[in-house]
Image 1 (tube, helix red, strand yellow):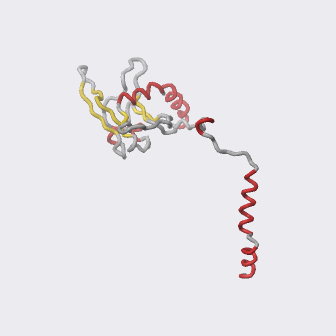
Image 2: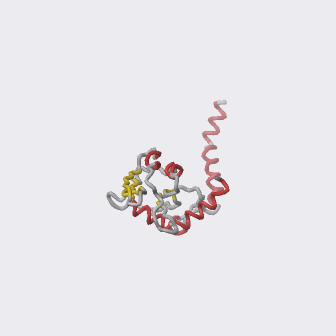
Image 3: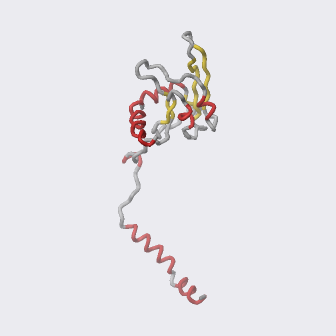
Length: 163
């Protein structure tokens, strides 16, 4: 047995097997996607990207009723909410901050929200350029929601058969 293993080692059999695999794949076309130039791969409607706050389409008023369920269910403690009562007796948020460094995109906040106010979009390409930019405030989240409302609705419609 030792003699056979010595002959195999001497002839570099394992090395030649690996070289054969490399040679077979060398002539195949590349499957690498050159990201910025070629675009992105298709995404699932359940993809979890940046968070957004939604508004009612008819009134343009934010949906959040400041129940704070998203803040309570967040395992990473990334959400901070402050609220106050309005003159009509409803409660609305005065502060809604999400720390993107802490957020783990688990989707529990979206599941807990009774009015579908907070949602995870399929936006993956957002950058943080300066100190403090990791805190997304209420206005930033509402702007993302406004910009992606049609895509959010389309993703929810595509996901409907699986819910």
